[in-house]
Image 1 (cartoon, rainbow, N blue to C red):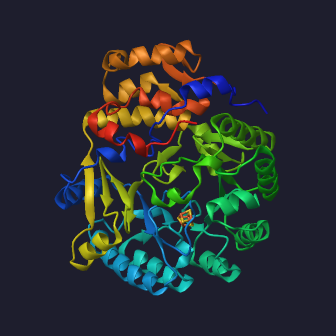
Image 2: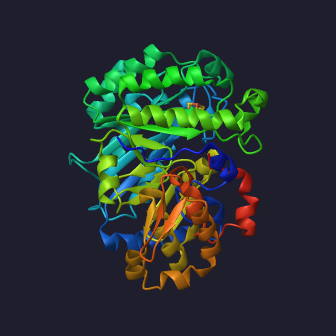
Length: 464
Ligand code: SF4
């Protein structure tokens, strides 16, 4: 297999700077409280005319114990009664939001994320699905993607059978690293045996695919330990793999303050850990999908990337390009028509709004024509590693070179370093530039360098 990458540590070090991950454009720091419930209702009303299918994300925030690297919106508790209270509010939110959507719109994609969704008992998840089914038309098609994040430390084999019976066909498991020293340092003790048993149970119960997450750049990580983790994971043959770089932002994510930063790998080792992961995954036949993501050749994501149908959103990469995204639960983000909107990030505020019969909207944004154009360009970068200039010009009736004239100096600099190839019809990331797609995307981000983006700079992870 030919490598997608040319791996050059010096170059990566030189370009290793903070940047957005572009799960949306504009990125979340641009959302404001000026976006109101009336705006959201109007975007939903307009989107109903499109008849597009829906993707539903439900945030389930509780976890039994804190992982110290965590950057998710979650609540640590062992009080299972909190799940019941949360579910009650979730069902109320669902009734409010569901009433705004045309009933005929099909839910092709459903994702339960967290937190730890399996903190909720299967019977509670069954009630959630039944309520979703009352408000929306849940797809019965074979291509539907109904996925759930599972914590191998706490999910039971019988839970997996129950989830399969409810219609879930994809699972995502956090692993990060099997090395015991790393697990102790990040406060997440998870054995190889329990993890492999969960993967096996998903397969035995007919899940169509299993994704696992690894992280490089964690404290105490070594090449030898990560190599063992990679070998174990590759043996288990998950359909999809994400290999994230740990972003140490303790000023923003409180749990990370528990990590002893002196044990974080130095930049050189970080790059070697990443290189090792890429080398082993490519050698094992995994295909590069896009930023941090790999999949087996027969996986839907690989086919979508080859066909140019891949989409990037808050859940990572997806095959359902035309869906409007409906986010439910604390901190959840929706992407409906030309808008983004986010629920309250604090559990109390979210619950209070729902209990008062209000949509729990905290902030959002109506995209301008310029935002939509740049979002389309950045989608092409993140999903294909290439901008099709003619397609963008035809769709948005612009002269690409004139419109983006201010981006040209930065693009020429990337070209001079061999990261991109410029031609009259396209801008393409070279094998040297594949790991630095964010840098190419940043050339088209109007908000980079603005006050709101600068204020948010500590929130961005480093490119490598
Ligand atoms: S990493 Fe996952 S399981 Fe761990 S605290 Fe964060 S959300 Fe919970």
